[in-house]
Length: 287
Image (tube, rainbow, N blue to C red; front, side):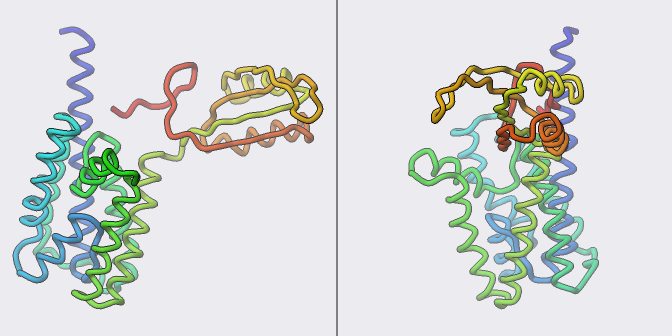
């Protein structure tokens, strides 16, 4: 069997395993922490929790049924692989909530429930998104809306979630709505951490009269390749050599130390990068 086919099967297996773990963590966050304390999440999940509470029907049923139309949209508009991964994740999550529903919640303290429920949801959703799926149809709607309107995906999601989280105030009380907002914020930040990781990429720009020495130090001490760009001072008109490189978040302090030690007067700018491909920069491939 050709090597690339083996790798494809390995990637499919890895994707399935991590989507399964993410969906189970989502179910744990819902049934063990949030739902017993009348705290909701945003998106279709939040609507499902409210409908389940008002009707007495199982949460898993609403999670699956309400997400299904958006999965069909995702299949037609976004892609087969994404839709299948999402369908699998939503199915595992729905079954997980059914199996966990009889299990009593770990805590009756709404603050602890919001914190740990948000953590569990954030890790779970982050894993599923990182490996090519989704657990909430709101994200699919947001992607489609963003293509036809001037609003970004984040703005569309925020609009839906403000409406949904506000609804929790009328159903569960306004204190629970505030806890829901806390849980949502924690989940949002954890999702970002899971997607970006502690090795989040950062771009580095350095302007110094000792550019060659600094570049050599970055290469020797961090193992990072550098690119030298020719520039000109806008005020002085002097020729300048600019160093450009890409590092991880954990290397930021080391870079600052190297530049400060070698040239305290150097200009240093560090910014976040969403993604890096190619060149000598090594970053784990997740797909």
